[in-house]
Image 1: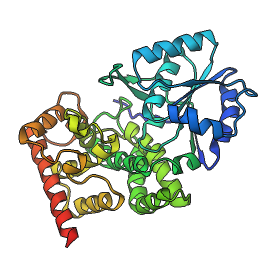
Image 2 (image 1 turned 60 degrees about the vertical axis):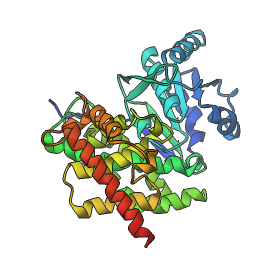
Image 3 (image 1 turned 180 degrees about the horizontal axis):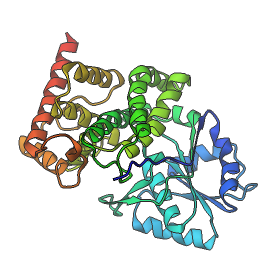
Amino acid sequence: MFKKALFPGKYIQGVGAIQELPSLIQLFGKQGLILASPITYEKILPNSGIDFQKHSLLLEKFRGECCEEELSRLAMIIADKKVDVIVGMGGGKTIDTAKIIADRSHIPVLIVPTIASTDAPCSGCAVLYSQEGIFESVYYQKSNPAVVLVDTEIIAHAPVRFLVAGMGDALATWFEAKSCNVTQSENACGGLSTLTGLNLAKLCYDTLMEYGLNAKIEAERHIITSALEHIIEANILLSGIGFESGGLATAHSIHNGLTALPETHNFYHGEKVAFGVLAGLQLTDASPEESNTVFSFCEKVGLPTTLADIGLKNVTHAQLMLVAEKACIQGEGIHHEAGEITPNKVLEAILAADALGEYRKTANKH
């Protein structure tokens, strides 16, 4: 395997950055279409100050699911209106839909995330679901987005739980990239990790540890200083490049396993990934000092540290074995860890993380 790394074409971040959107669209095409999530369509865009008629921009409201039916609907609009550049503006599923339809239509895609809850905006892959929201497949694009445009004013006014969930997703980046590098496992680009991917993953972790709590406090009051700017960059850019060019391992596999239990479906991707990180530390024999540092971080910013925190207060061992088995299916990133990984080992790691989390909650009360 060769060393491989992937990046968005341009990354732009700052207060009022959305004002750059019309000129960026014109840079890539003549007829732009903005696919906007319902909240973006109804609340954010009308107050953006952008003159859509002046710039001949088409607006289309996303219908809620990244599925073949929605993609077919958009393909007809793109063909009919001669759209040659598409913008995905909103959360994860809106963004993924824009990425896939742009790839299939052979036109550039610009991504404008309105929340910093995952590292999806920068990546060259997306998740396809059925109309009912059931996972179907991962779709890989020919290239990463042409532009990722992040307006920190918009992110700062989103519910703070999204930002914290993004920190949970970003928390996994360094641990998973490190594991892939140690075992020389394939990253999400289909190659080996580069120094760039590995060091950006480490910078992502260091940024979370240094600025995470302050950024949460600021976001709760819609205040924007360097701490919030740094965490938004960590959640979106550093984690995006870090996971794709570094690789995935235990945390995301345990997340995928947790989706087998309906009780976890009301929790965000990054919240479940964060618990996956804590379980992964037990699985990979991390030092108590490192484990304590990560537990402490999760407690401070409000990420889950126990099974009860992700809806599994009364979970049985049999249910957790389903989680462990799903986490260990062939092709999962958990097999990028050193040594043989089995469902029994994963089950024990999940139980150990939960036990430590419960102990710390009790100890902290006293």
